[in-house]
Image (cartoon, rainbow, N blue to C red; front, side, top):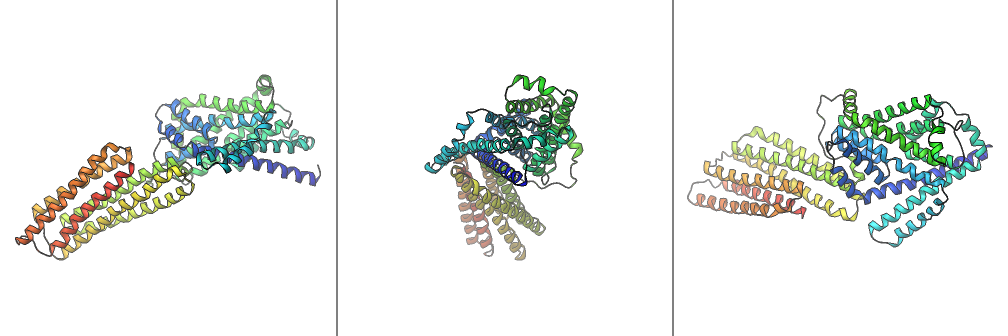
Length: 539
């Protein structure tokens, strides 16, 4: 093979690989966005039953055609505490089973019918250009992606057929199992997709090329791809919490242990491929795809009962940090699935409201006890609320860029809620000013007045509890009760101000206290209004 022929071969091979990867990306990203509600439903059905969690991992991966995306989502869920490590271990094993679907699709390229499947590229893009509905447009992109997958495989196969003799001479000399194993790891780590590496191997088989002596050699590469596929999850978890890193380690241990066991079996049984898959299936592409499926299913069956062992080993390898890690429900891994990201945002919004309400409670306690020492801790809580708010805003902006029209209303509601919740922090700040002014001016409020204020604050707390429950559980049946509580707070404000004016007229209160008292109860009434606005966004 001359330098010119080698250069042309590399260009053709890279072009085919590029088309294949673009097709996989179109297929994966658009299926994922269309199925985003299903993903949320699947992950919402998690339980402590291993088979259920394994099924969720397999179904999700089969649905979105990417074990990498599924594993990254699992790492994200573990990081924010939505699922535990025992659930994650079973899901990761299921994801390895689900990912074999891509290899089975690639194996179809060995049959003549796939030539006609390539026309889906044109049909899909025409659907995308002609139709205006977002769901139909994404369906068109999925069809185009599927067509591009087969076009890419055909380009790779054709490039190899043209230089078949020269390439065959190179690969015939590669017979060392350990070298082939490392090649599989390296190539998969490089492209971060075991499906891509496996598909290239399948394209080689369609071109009539064999690796080594044509025995077990190709299987060593397939085993290596399973370890290389762990790179995505490990990279995703390296900056996350301890449990997220443990999930990445579980993924690595599962694949390494399974590959080592099969590696040993293949070394001891040189005629494994000849005695099994080559005898059962006529097409070489199908033999490779079937081994890939057999490997992952067998490993899952063997290791599923030992999920607890994998979890304990990960805990030994990744020790808990002495310093507590920051809590947040926001995780970049969730951004790839809008409904999952929105679900996490709603939880983070409750965390923000809890922080803002803690600031309010402390500011009210500071006022009631005339304790200036509580003003600084109140400001610290307000600062924390501001930090959480900024993180939510940044997350919402990134989510909005890739969200569908149907999800824009939820995102808009979250933006609106953010403003209402931060008003609570502002009211807490106002209370610290009233406390400071009361102490500086020596203003005192009677015991009966403080009891009336306490009763109003109690109603605000009741309203907050109802709002939180309605927001988290989407309980619209609570809205009438929320409205009644808010009206009760409005009535209490009016009554408190009326009685205060009566006390002023009777000389029982100092005129200097009017501004503070009226602003105080008005702020409490405003707090109730903002909580009610938040609750009504679930309609």
